[in-house]
Image (cartoon, rainbow, N blue to C red; front, side):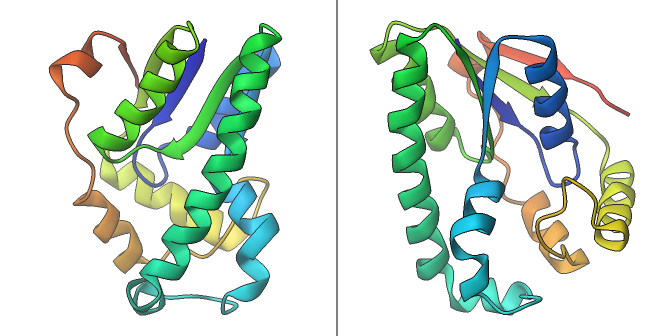
Length: 170
């Protein structure tokens, strides 16, 4: 089984995934962890929204490299009978469709778990994460970054709604 964990910034995706994996035979892949381990040292200490806009190609190329490596691992885990959770945010329908197709192509079920949390609660969580830099912290998220992401999440398609579970973590 492949589970795409979708939600906006501060929804609790990583925390949800960690709990799920403790309770089930599952492996988690978080794009933030891969990017942090492989590429954060090549970025400014506290990148702002302007840095991401000016360096979008640099950033997206590296995410694509990570995802390619992760996809190969996912296929191997399918063969071993291990469920996989992907914590990639999944803001676009195209991105979600790509991974649901990966599951289908490997004769696996695919689900989307959408963490539905109101913006005020999510922003409060982000501020706390920025301040405390706990286990789910990967980088400072500014209000500008948070607001940008609010506008890029694409609604679920009718096909996606067939495999969608909405989870409220307020």
